Every structure is written in C-alpha cells, then in structure tokens.
Length: 373
Image (tube, rainbow, N blue to C red; front, side):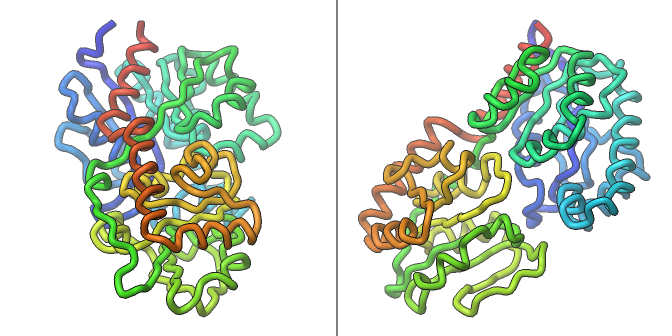
C-alpha cells in the first residue's frame, strides 16, 4: 500500500510551547519532518505549541488546558518521579483523556503514532494499527508488576511496530513483545544547523566543558564527585538545565539554568571543548549528545548502554568508568588537535548513522507503510 493520504494520529505529553522552550523539542522536530509530506494527514494530541500549518489539533479545549498545565508542572515523567503515589491523579487523568481521543478517532485514522509506552495503554479496545515510539525512560515502566501483561493485552489487539530510538533497547523489547509485534529501532534525527558549527574551543586559553541536563541526582551522576579535582579556573565546567531536584552546586561549577537549543548553537557549542555527561539515569539516546557530535564536539560519557550505543571509545568520544578514566580523558583532550580529530569523527558518525530529521521522518513513513501492507 502507498502512503497516499495516510491519516496519522500523533499523541504525546511533551511539546515545546515556543521556539525557546527546550522541552519536547524532538517531538516538534518529528512533526515538522512529517508535515512536509503532502500525502500524509497529521493530526495531533499534544500540549499546546507552534505547529506547522498543515497539522491539525484534535485535543479539546479542556484537554489542551490540562496538557499545558502538565508541562508547567514538569511533565508526567517528572511528576511520577517527584510525587510518587501522589501522582496517581495525574496519571489517571492522562489515561482517561487519551482513552477518549483514541475512541473518538479509532475509525478515522489509518495509524496511531503513540509516543511512550504508557500512552499506549488507553488503546485497549481499539484495533487501529500503531507505531509506538519508546525511550529509555520507558524501561522503568516495564519494571512495574503486571505492566508487561497490560501492554501485551493492548498490543496484541492490532498490527504494531514498537520503535525504540536506539538499537540497545531492541533485545529487551524483543524479549517482552517480539512474539506479538515487530520491534524496529527508528533513530531520531539531528537538525541540519548543528552540522554547520565551526568549533573554536580554546579562546583566551580557557578550556570550557559543558554539561546539558535536567538537574537531578541520577542525571548528574558522578559529575561533581569526580570533577572536583579536575575543573578549576582555566578548565571550566559550564552546567545548563532546569533544577528539578534540590541539588547543592559546587562553587567551581558555572551554572546557567535552562538553555535553549538556539543559545547552545549560537554561543556555547562553538566555544567549548566538548560535552560531558556522567548520567546514571535510564537514558535512551540523549538528543543533546547527538547534536553535540553533529557540531563536531567530542563527548566524555559514563559507561552505560545508551552511551555505548553511540560512543566509540577514543574514536568519536571517551567512555569513563571511574575518576581515573575521567582524568585521562581530560588530559587527552587538553590538546586542540585531539579535540578536532575526535570531533570530526563524531560528526561523520552522526551523518552516516543518524542523519537529519528529514531522514527520521522517512524512517517513520516506512514504518507506517510496513504496517498497512
């Protein structure tokens, strides 16, 4: 079957309110990539934000107001993480609203494109084929008692492609759902502008490393405990991101608060030596890492599946498992030639294996076609 006039319902709980909003930016990029295809009819159920003219909104006024408030409160994942059992009301309301839109549109759509596994639960009782995008944080959901059984009950009611955004997630998803759904990794893309950055990292003989992350204990990982003997006056660590937990910041950290992609692109990526992340969070494939690599920046990253999936040690970045590894990495990159060589390798890897958001959109369109053939 061709993709002529395919009607797609795209649902999610994260979307940027405007061009400066960093939240849900990848969702906006996917929507933009799909919207340029005139043979697709994209309908969305998302928090309010700027959408391409051809994309229509299906959320009611009440649903849109609730989704907007959800984003103001940090999003459903943040609410679950910080409020625990007290988040039950928000979770139930989300499932009820999604159930309503799925039932309203079940007979009007060719494909349900659902972002995150938990948002697939309300599909129960419908049979519309579905593409379910999966992030690393979804793996926490699978650990909840009975959750795999519930999701299997939903998935087996339809033709389904489960689409993690990184290859490392495929084996576990195959084990859980491979007998009733196709498991197909669909990498997200990178905005073309990141490939245009020209790096000049050691201006005024000051080395700048940056970390871009939500400030939580798991996202920061061992950054402060391992970095305290490394970062100093002429070797700066600049930290960007929203404070989502009460974190005491060392005096040697230069903290800037939340940052927009445009600010990273125009100011910080051209001036820094590289990106550092020592996260212990359930990562999928961190978008900021892909953007940094596309910009020609080396990355120092903790030893975990999401990072090993894209970092080839000493070739396009550096994997660290202990404080000594971090010292060796910083010593290696105390050299503009090393930064340039590894950064160029990182950019080449992204071009070959990830591509742009247009490439991502094409991968999703192929998945839609596969479902309907």
